[in-house]
Length: 124
Image (cartoon, rainbow, N blue to C red; front, side):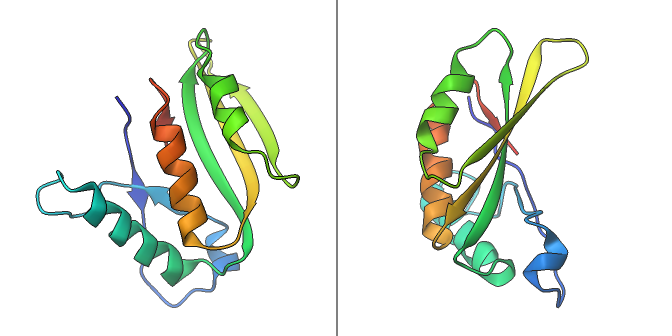
């Protein structure tokens, strides 16, 4: 199961002030069952606070004993991509931060859709 979380602060800030601090959160979408509405809402939020093209930061959590880390890394193939990992204090989980170049909001959504197919990945 994949968990999606988004935090969005309304206001008149430029993207550099947000520091790519958009997190996926369950946006209103007719009861939570319509993925199309979710991605339409997410696309609108991205376009409101991001300036494209740009570097975008993705964050994921995987079980430390799971092969999901490599599966996630295989999705991000752009030459600009940088990965950083951090183990949880108990050693059961690993956070993966991915910074990569995207041309527009649809690229961000496509990456999230690809990662969502990997079992047991939590997307932040």
